[in-house]
Length: 291
Image 1 (cartoon, rainbow, N blue to C red):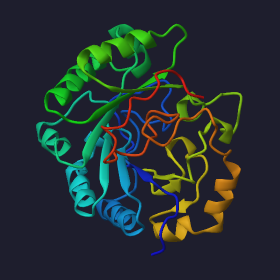
Image 2: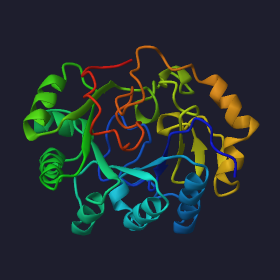
Image 3: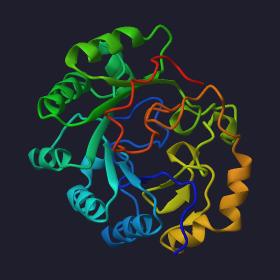
């Protein structure tokens, strides 16, 4: 296979199911969403192709990736192939066996947080009790020494974003990113028939790719409305080297100067490269909304 020039990370939506139904979800996942048509063998093929293409990092996301019964096998395969791994979870429930997987060298964890107040956090997640459970599992991850970063999306007018940052720092979180709502998925403008590429940070297609629970390949989870092909029908290398992939790359605006370097502090907290060897050593990103 040819090298995937410029691609630094791949986001794999290994299920569309989630315990929560966040008001701004870019993938429109939730408790009644489909797990997707990708099979275990399909995902194994994709992970193998990512490694063979020389893409250094993979992020397992969803939906809620911990709801996939195969998450630990996917992590094992990715690590064995030499990939850096990140699991982006809402951390509302972590099966006991998953903590050991998260503690493995080469794996890091990420989650979302919205407020220091349960009522405001749960107004966004539409999940009663989610604030307490996520907060508790953030503390547990830190207690176990697991590398963790947290993304805050500013969803509500007057949302307690600064207070949420202060609470996270008090818990011991050092990697915190803040972003505005991107008008895609459930947060799309109802007056607009099609989401706009202007909502994208510019790194999708150029520096990252994503695969949906049904196998649709695009530039990132936020750009699912721009589909380049399906990995159940074509090998990933063929999709990345296709005219369609280049066509979509040209549609997306170039990365904006306001976005910081590619150091896990880019525009969208859920859309960063998975953990890099220099991740812990890098200086903490500037806190605040990057647009």
